[in-house]
Length: 202
Image (spheres, rainbow, N blue to C red):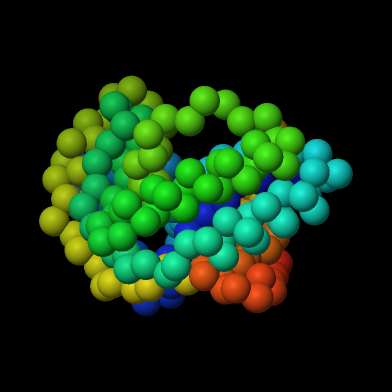
């Protein structure tokens, strides 16, 4: 199964960002981009790729321990940028150092559970908004449109393990679908799993 750990923004933050993105989608060239949906919005902490089911119990135990070691922290969706001419993203501010430490722990948890991990780049939280389907769209106006955005602050209170279901090859209009596998409260010393969800359609 294809897995990653993440921070999921709350509904209020998602609603604010959706209003901002609606404006971006009126800009010239927006119809040539592939926009992510509200159910897709997350801040990846660590990407695990394909994980053998036999490793899942140990991975979950390690992530539970990692969550217990990190207290909740403040965060807001703010600003944005682009990866060359490929991706437009929204950024984060507030507890970025705390989020970086949580991301490091989420990566270390996977390595200790036996999940092969590629070399990690310095952590930079971002939330993907759109992907460029052609080389001809200038992404700079979209970045300019999101740079001044500052959403509401919330308290990040849990570490979430997410399964990614890739689109079926050859089926038009298919998009990735994300399923919450498990979530652990940050700083929760009794270590109990707080929530487990089902598929989220994008």
